[in-house]
Image (cartoon, rainbow, N blue to C red):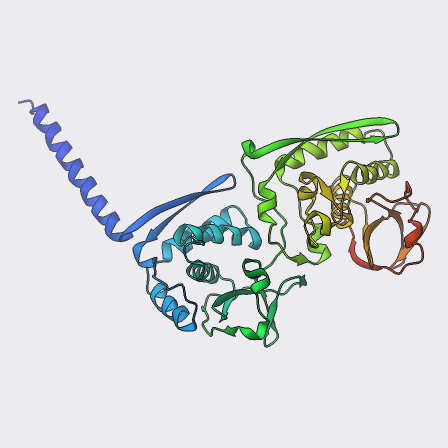
Length: 409
């Protein structure tokens, strides 16, 4: 006798329905009262589950007691999914620490908007950064919460404090500006996460991918040997946001900040094409004059109201740049195309470059037994050739602040 097909289908449907209901209940119990949160992070989307227990109420009045209360409550919450998502995303996209911090900032903003309660927002940043393994600390005073992270690099322009022989750099100094008090006005909060063992690095050796539609085209041109060269650069304003509060790092870190993929593709292949047929010295001369004359010059004080070093991509994006910015861009171009040894020369009011060729050109600089030739990437009163230094710097002392030696393969 044939089975009743309709009845069989109905039983199958009921079994599937029960299965899905049970699965949903189990999933719900595992996740608790979790919300699914997401936001765009450059060219990707960051997704995470936020359990209701992670939402901690904090008064806007800053105090050590409030920090302790927040720590007690959030330590007992179901935060594992959130921290796992952050760590997995960091590893998947190989985020440098500074870029990872931008991810943490945006995550904290999703949980507790900065403008609603700055104290609470900072507490979440501290918690997330610490749980991701970084040695982050807080100090309070003057109704302000100051956020620090341990760093072992040479950093300038931002406050720090010492704890034994360990240095902690301030991550939120810019939020207070002139309201920031002397360091002794703030009392450290003695709370430490056991997993927060790692120092934080400001080195940016890889930029995230940006959405193609977020790029804009910038026309750049300059004249070389009576020929005008045109470039249609792809630049992105997101690069400005990444480095908005980036501190004054050492020159090695600064000089090795790369270009994003799309900006790179709009510039480097064109330069390589233009340099075909030129020998190495003429090619470097071309790059020196491109960096010198393709962009308008203006001092940082006039441009930004303070000293600010631009990364190579920021220099390509901005209308104006100064000697630091040109030196970093010139270094990047020469390294990428010719990979020659170089040194950066810091004068009291100027930064310039020198390159090592097979045979030195013009006035040589001897550094550690090797001869380097001046290559001035910033406009001067004279039209300087390779091996020439401006008259005003001829008898001025300088310091070699960075020496690049290519790795021999």
